[in-house]
Image 1 (cartoon, rainbow, N blue to C red):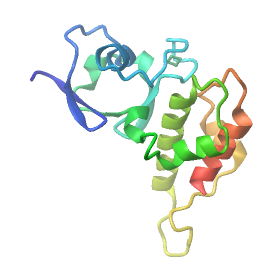
Image 2: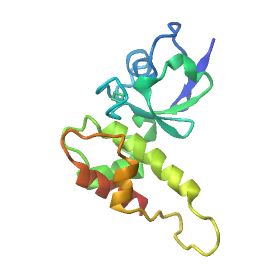
Image 3: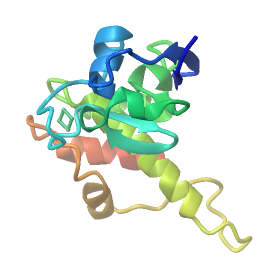
Length: 165
Ligand code: FES
């Protein structure tokens, strides 16, 4: 096996063509079509995946640049039988209409909440027990890279708050 990348915990060979974007590699070569191509220009966030814990627009980066990296897509976060807390919260709160932006929203929110959890003070004076206090306004700010053409923002924010707290 030549240069590889970990995708949802499985080692995969990177494409021979160095011009392939990470998004096209995931969708076309690996058949992981959960990540969506909206604008293909870094504007909408539909293609968001998590690379080494950081959310990125997979349409803006080449697969070949990610040798040895660890990528998580929506398919790697949970299954219909065993959804992640955020996936469950999006269902519970109707955090979508057409659903096209949802994989990117959930990948982005997953990494965002992880970032917040890592930044959260770990001193004994907080008794949050892993919960994160975050306002709707802050969620909107931190999720501003993920657009929803249906305008389901209120329910998206409610879902993220649900999962956070
Ligand atoms: Fe990548 Fe829109 S498809 S940001």
